[in-house]
Image (tube, rainbow, N blue to C red; front, top):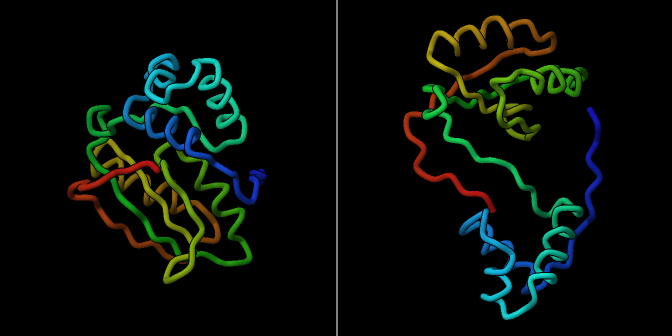
Length: 154
């Protein structure tokens, strides 16, 4: 697994924060509109935007609606794994297309995984055939999502 190198911290100023807030409101807002709102030039907004992307402070990705894409089942899976194989286990899990979020953590589980599946049969197949084939997993606990009440991106 390739480690991502990040700066310890990034000195965001008020202009950077305002650009990010405008894009959170509408990710396709033209630089000219953001510049008008901030009373700066569109070139400045473009330059700041490109720097935020280059520094990996801002990522531009599509945000999808899984149920509208045919994924009717979403779940979080807590995984207890052999600590000596942890990196290999997460590398294998990350490769599964159903996995949309994967973290190493502390607490009762070493790994938390969020998955999207077409239906319960697909989830069962994922749990038994895909996760079940990963050597180093000691146990799993699955939490089905009944309703997403809040989803935010900071």
